[in-house]
Length: 402
Image (cartoon, rainbow, N blue to C red; front, side, top):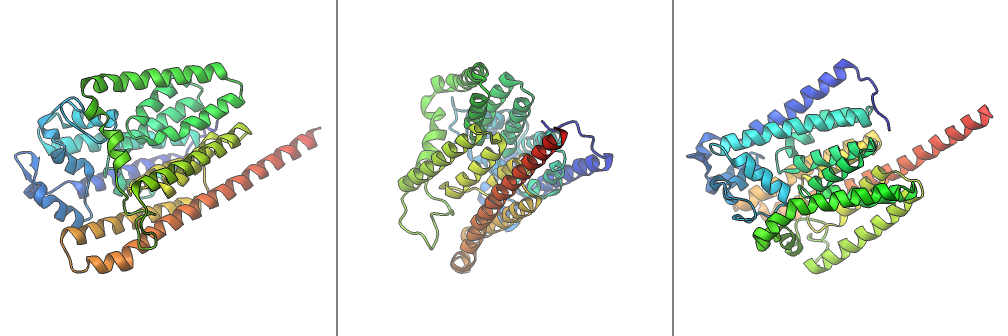
């Protein structure tokens, strides 16, 4: 494990300032003007038009109103929410205040601290690459778009503890991460393969037990309290239609949701099995996780723009070539502008909407997937070359010593 490499004070200061600037900029940009707020609540009839026109939409803001957070209903028991339990609880806790302004500020402050935490853990594990998380502007557009920072924080904490061989805390944190946002689950099969390779069966069983017990403790009370509301996250995502993704575009027609589900599941399972084998033969968990997640993004039926932030974090932990960070960041920024431009045109019933969708929007979607492919393939080739170089250098060193 690479850690405890001293960082120049200016680099750490730059990181702290950069993260703070991006997050504060995002908060100021996304906070609705006072004309949109009445008696502490959001006037949703005007919010969409304003937010799309100003590239200032945030689920964190809008769902305060549309998911009735201002009523302080107990999530899943009294209120149906399409997110896993940890995120639902977070939404509920942060909304217990005096209206949307305090709720959004509390969310921003917590996510700012999480972003700083992510950087400091990166600094300990991948010190040469951590600075890119801070200075690239993806936090500005995606840090407060949804609740992804919560899941990313748990994922990074779990990975850090796993690398430090604190296996039980790691399993618990992974459980919290999975039930904040499902994506940390991609680490788990590869951790299993690594522990099996190392013959650490007892450690694996302890981690599995800790993960299951924590998951039950998180979910069972709400499943018992209101099974229909609790299970809505699963039923909603299973039945969710195709978004503006690789299936729903002018080049591919007639793909049903069920077909997309089956195809994407099959591809991801094959990728997981292949990379589990690679890890079992000596590969790194983080390499397998980042590349499998790239495959998942490529074939998943829905691609929300903020998913790019997850890939960016995983890529940094995997120490992908620096040029891939630029590719990912540019794709994320283009995707953000493209997605909310088309929403603005549609919501305002602009006569240009049809032209934009047919001539611009799907070019942007194509650019997203080309960027994913270029970054993923480039990382796989670059990492393979680097590992081979490291092995050759190690073999040469041993030969010279002998």
